[in-house]
Length: 289
Image (tube, rainbow, N blue to C red; front, side, top):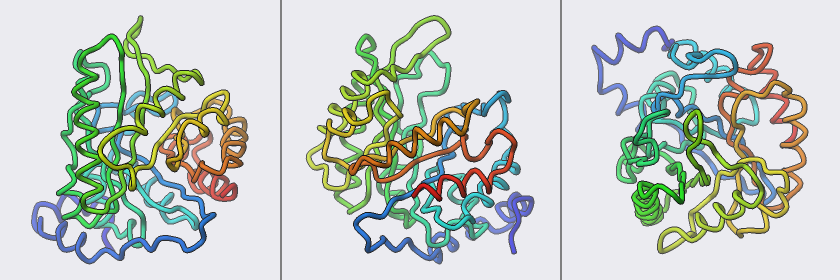
């Protein structure tokens, strides 16, 4: 059985193990129940240089600890799948942690956290061809729009082309839209209901088809208005590690009452929960589903 600490030697001595493991990975079987909900674990933050979780600004900088937590979380009953960059998808595939899981490859990671070019969020990760070649189920893209920054236009156009390229291969496009602005301390995300509704409307109109498009949206004060802004399936994101996880859980539970909300995409909140019990935090969310 391969362990996280075995990966550097395996990658050095047998790089083709990545390709063979991806080819042999048991694929995800879509649920037959139309009311099924999904829980995806996300760990694509490090590729943008965003390593913080809770009070630790470099928590995700320890790859072996991150992999340990991901293996625990992905092994819990009811976890549907994973969202990540190629390095983590390949590591987890070598570890056998993605067998039978829905896997989405993260595509645009060029907007490095805190960089002057953060909103010129280029597609430096997976492309649609690479996602198909790796046998993944789709791709995820971050769509941050600053109406005062012309760099957002390039991201908007590239995202539209990526949605088309994924749909042409019958792959899911998970689009994560935000309206953002610059202020003291850098980029700020507008999580007000009006801003979230507007970003959802913009993302819903991307590309020449939306038949395979899902949206990843934040919790807003009025989730009914957010859910009414589109007919596309919605997955609610977890966001930063909360100080009060119980209150956050209640907000997630309320969002699930909306028929267009199909589940969650959660990363640091479950991988680095207050108290450190990854399995318990995951099980509580699965219990809602």
